[in-house]
Image 1 (cartoon, rainbow, N blue to C red):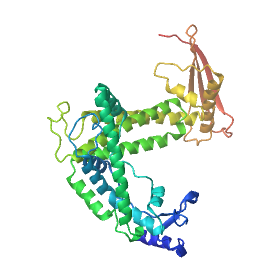
Image 2: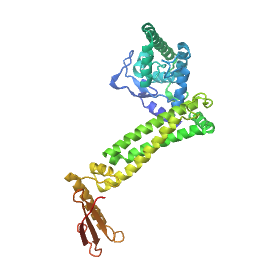
Image 3: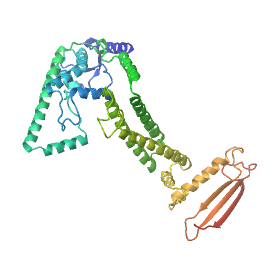
Image 4: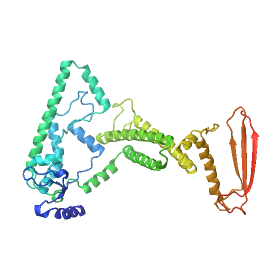
Length: 415
């Protein structure tokens, strides 16, 4: 009701002298009406029920649309019956939009509506993926040339017949539509009944399908959180690779979960083992479980990587190459800092660490700091040990160190 009142108030201030009830705004580029030449106004339109994955799959099933329908000979409704079903699905929304358009643009003709709304599209158009297109090409290549040509002509004639029938359906609907703004029409989307349907679905849903939905939400949320947390470290090559692996793994898992959820909601009964002898599960496939497990592993790896990278960037701000190089260091291995800039960044981090701790309270100041620097010359191995013992009573300046320093250069041997 609040939305309807808002629409009525906005409609009341829209060109009352021209009686444009329900008009939202003028269409850019000065698009005029064909007969009167007046400015064409875009109307407020009603919203339909949200199109979920299972609803989309149901409509495709009603219309006989299948990714394999062009290459697998299966029985499905005739073109005429499929067109009738498509028109029934389109008519409520189309009739509402045409009525709103007529109310906002008195004297408009059908061509005005088509110019603003767009030409009708083939509702039976089948979504062709790369794999489906490849299989369709292989199927056509195996047909005799005459049969392949006949199949192509048949598909083209069907497409033309569908578009002509849809055009006539739009014209008939235009004649049927009466000028009526959106806020005075019967609602296309009833939220109360939809909520009841959702609650009923939760009460009767199989636990496997519920976990499917929960897991999809959790994976999407984990992807969003990790991508947001990685913003300060995106310039580190290891993080960029980790984010790419995360997107690939989670998108693959979500696609598999969506397919299993749509199949589960469409089947009145779970699949039996006889339907797919290679997969003993009925509501979820083993490949989906494997993809979800892979996504969880990638999430765990990226969490560890981000914790290390963000910690290193606190000590090496802006030194993305140095941080990436330190990440490549494993236990028992050395990091070769041959470039002066890298050595300067590393020693500068040590200096900043000293200055930060020199400003801390005496209770938090360590009694001694020890640093060990080793060379990488295998012919003359040695290490430099430095011990710093601060004098807490004389430490007054943040830029100066007060205390004792012990340096020791010792030779070492490689095992």
